[in-house]
Image (cartoon, rainbow, N blue to C red; front, side, top):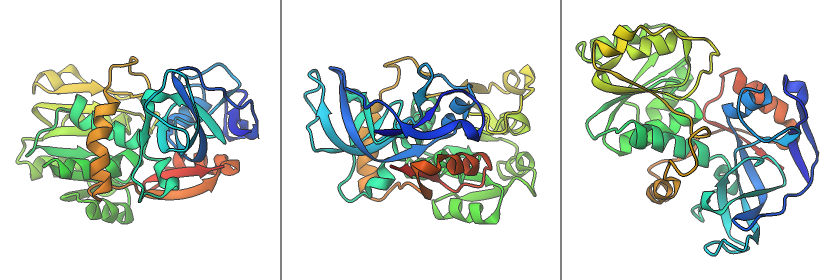
Length: 321
């Protein structure tokens, strides 16, 4: 089979679409013939050596969708021939072996290409808002980078669960997308000071939940947007810039700053099964959808990384074999 591989850490030039051994599923795994696989910022970090993964050389990708072609002896709830989406390393390949507990059905009406980009952003958004953020109906949620893959999903979920949503983005086109997904208010952070706008909008009280993935000065200012006893969830550092947060920024207002990485969470610490049982009916009913920015062949994975790094995406980038 062929797979997106790296033999060393580095820039775009280390990305290869090359022959690789086809995996054999272990007892607790299933083998999927891949129709599509999502590209995530973690793939860029992995390429550069900043994200955990198997020893090199290794295949990239953290999610995929396709047809189950082989089932391990310990997996009795999945059958050959089922159309499934899954989380697991090596998804950007013609075949991937994944843990049966991380394999989920997707609605029959869904495009199989879209399904490959769903698990990471939907589960990340769920755990940010519900598991870790403890969002409640009536809360105000600030979604930084609202037009990103996670951002576009988080806006929809937060609205469906009864929150008021404020989203930030860098262009009017992205802001319009956020509005179309349900954002009650949008802020162009390149032309407006979002901290001042939010303080004015909330009469100085701040918001209950902030989802932040940019890092640097954006993280610093975002902390000051959190209401008393509110939560800021930091789940990335797309700017690759350190932030300087004073203890008074969170202790003085009884704010909580929470770091979150689904990929670095201890095995079994997050209940993905229950999350998907809640999410899939919402997806089937059209209450939440995946926004697809681009679909590219896996042989053009370097273009996908370049596009995602440029922070010009609106939604998810997906690869097909």
